[in-house]
Amino acid sequence: METQTKIGKTNLLVNPIGLGTNAVGGHNIYPDLDEQVGKDLVKTALNNGINFLDTAFIYGPKRSEELIGEVLNETGKREEVILATKGAHQFVGEDVVFDNSPEFLKEAVENSLKRLQTDYIDLFYIHFPDENTPKDEAVRALKELKDEGKIRAIGVSNFSLDQLKEANKEGHVDVVQGEYNLLQRDAEKELLPYIQENNLSFVPYFPLASGLLAGKYDKNTTFNDIRANMPHFQGEQFEKNLEKVDQVRTIAENHQVEVAHVVLAWYLTRDGIDTIIPGAKRSDQVVNNLKTLDVQLSQDEINTIDRIFS
Image 1 (cartoon, one colour):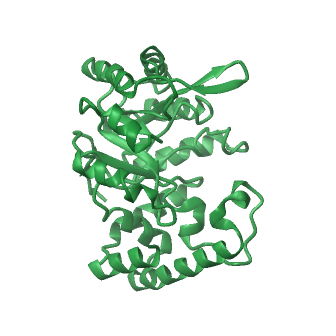
Image 2: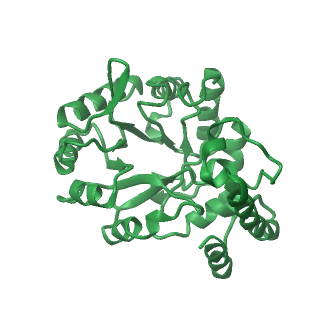
């Protein structure tokens, strides 16, 4: 489990399996979270060789960063961890708006530093683009913070290709985060080619498509949460997706692992993807995700999966 990989052109070395922490203090996403369970998730990750934690201001809001800060303080493991967080959400009365202005981003970084109880953030993302700020100006503000040692790498999240190009005019962007999985492959058309050409690194979120690609559901499964309204989970489309997942199950059985491990391993064969950040709500899920590193897919298997979901 000592495998480490470099994220793109940065000098950040991470376990290819990170931890997405929206279930750590993310009460706006999961209202019934137990905060001690969340802290234990992070401790389990750190104790099992996961050193890449992905959080954000909006998870909570604020609470995920605060809990992670507490864990890093209690364990004394800050220097071992590559810490990513994100900012862009601003509360205006009852509304939330996106703000990429240099002033706001600098303030967001300072506030994240306090919540995370650290004096530097390894990777700071602009979480969502706003409508007004020139993206190169936004990134330039982060470059100033990078020069001051407050952040080590610059990321953008949920940016279109045009927004990414504008953000990267001066070559300061290091990492791009966006939705990508075997059922949602739009990024392959233009975004991933640009990322590869410019030696950036792409970190996909929703890698298991809200659990659909984990192989845990069948056609009788019903959903009473956000998934009930997602196209992937609707009627005939849901059944077709389950058939595709079943074809991957054969490959998983050959490797004596779960479908999720094969799917996650497939992403790590893609050019431009150095690390993935599956989430977890229980400590055993954190440890289970690490079995992905034991899966060595053959080129035939890689091609087969590509074809099943083409």
